[in-house]
Amino acid sequence: MTIDPGKATALVFDPLTVRADRGRLALFARTIGETDPVYTDLHAAQQAGHRDLLIPPTFYFSLELEAPDPFGYLTEIGIDLRTILHGEQSFTYHSLAHAGDTLTLRPRISEVYSKKGGALEFLVKRTDITRDRDLVAEATSVLVVRHPEAAK
Image (cartoon, rainbow, N blue to C red; front, side, top):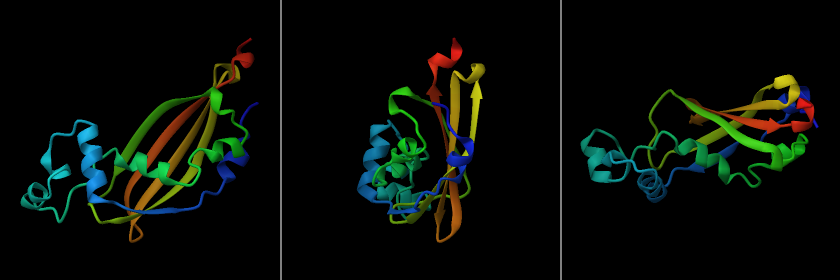
């Protein structure tokens, strides 16, 4: 079943507000192999001129997973979860964020397009991440939806 672009881009997501916890940031940084101590050591972060640990650049993606049903929107627009692949992920940064910051995420489907005669559809989701209404970052993810029957 193909994605209805109108329905997908009209989908309204509830904003998600989260507080960046220092312990979780440090664990995330260590898990991804980050070696710069401004992400894991408060003293080092403060010595570098930061008020607290820096949020690792790709951490924003994991915040969206805190939504009550982070992939429920896919089912809502008729996508079978067995047919999706993670296609791409990118970030645009506008300012630094630190442990203790309260961030609000506002996701939306920004685009739907297809290739290979409809055998592949691409769902682009953009999330604006703000602190006190100021844009901190934009996270963009692209999911690939496979329709092998369309290739025949």
